[in-house]
Amino acid sequence: MSSELSAASMEHDSEKKNEELRNRPPSVEAPGAPSALDDFPEGGLRAWSVVWGGFFAFIATFGMVNSYGVFQDYYQTSLMAHSSSSTIALIGALQLFFLYGGGPVIGRVLNVLVPSTLIASIITLALWLPATDQASITAFAAMYGTFTGAFVSLLPAYVYTISPIEVYGARLGSMYLLVGIANLVGTPTAGAFLTTINQRGFDGLIIFTGIMIAAGSLLLGAVGVVTELRKRKALDNSP
Image (cartoon, rainbow, N blue to C red):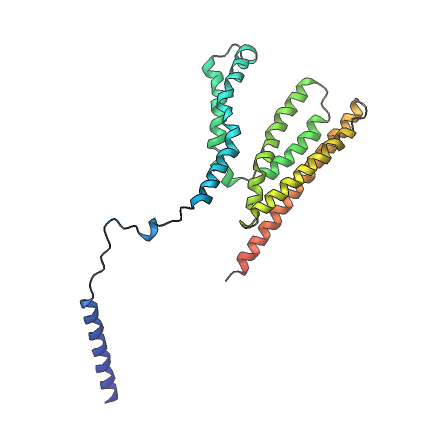
């Protein structure tokens, strides 16, 4: 008897819920109303300050396009006098294309800061130290400039990848404070090797430079490895 009453009660409740659903008015959204997916924070003054900060940070590189005419004229009159103007212009065009177009792709799959810094130290000791003629010095200068350019330009991005967003500004400022101190101390120290302008003095300067760059690359690599291990440990311990 009790089971029959329970079944009847459940059937009555089910019919009551169905009736409430049938009598509920349909929800109608106002035409043109923004959905939740379209609602995102615009950022206001702080966000646009970042945009303007990026603009002023890169404004120094905008002259690359305008100044290429100087190099074009030099190539046509000296290095590549037998080449056409259009062929020489491809040098600057391809440079800018790979510089700006390749960054978003290469930067996601390859960390070039630490390897480039380490290669710069190897080039210093392997090319500059034994160099005895102008061709060797020219080759060293070209390769050294290529690899140290990564260190100069990518260091703020590297600090960002290893720092929580809350302390990124403090770490970046502290880093450049130490960079300033290193420039203040390192340049006179390197100059102390040149008490006499001879091969021995330059050898000491070159060895000092190569060792300092190598030490910096190893420290950058160690920080990156430690940070990556901490991230993996945090992911493993997360519920």
